[in-house]
Image 1 (cartoon, rainbow, N blue to C red):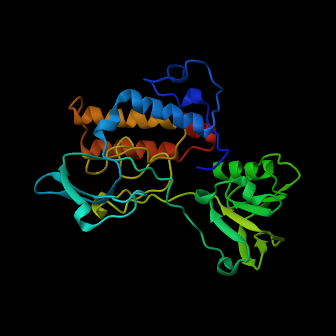
Image 2: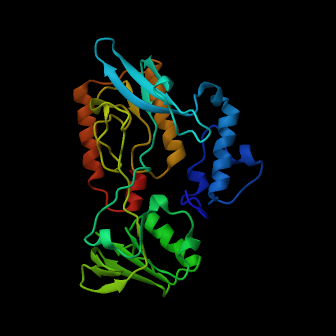
Image 3: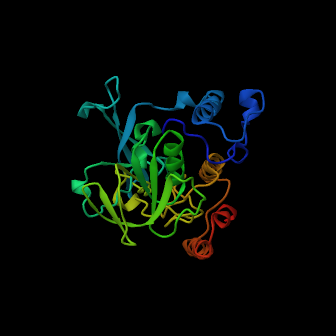
Length: 313
């Protein structure tokens, strides 16, 4: 997260079902809070639930695999030992066995970094939106965002607000289409870079001081055995997961791996759904029924044409 980040969705669509904003703040607040306010709200729910007593902190998942004979998971974690929480020894490895595993690690942390000819010799700065921290760094510079989704829109707006003198929005499929201020220009996809000169698909060129790649993220699970690893793009109806939660081995459940719109309550709904299955409150259908269900929703996803369609999906 970066400085000056605000919610891009109204709090009324993010509110936890069992812990409202009024419960936490004791008074009404605006619909689009800054990140510090949302963090405080989430921490308030954590404190109220008392969940911390059940959590091992400073442990990193290292290796998880399914034992077909014992019908359970072997989970190896590494206990981080120094004050910064980033060193370990072999004595710090702990292996335990579990009947069920939830993967809740998210999928917006490992950047998707495309390569363009000339990047290796570019005389400016290249970074992914994952590493963007403060728009003030780019005051009085000529910058370019590559991408046309929320990160590109937000970062471009931030840089303009805090003094960037020239902003280029570069797209692959279609432009964002906003009525930008005069300091903005829109270009089709970058083709190559020479020095600081960028050449675009329409043949035009422009000198750029910094390039911010708003090009999305990769699903990445280095701690999972390959047989347990979800392989999908950032889309609404992900691969190999019944109801977007239960993997091919349903004792492994993925939470929050979809493209996301109404996040907090979506995570809750998925977690509660998996919990109720674990508690025996319902049975999963046969593999054939699950596949038919998956095919129906994938076909429906393929008909979506707009953000509004995706939200209603």
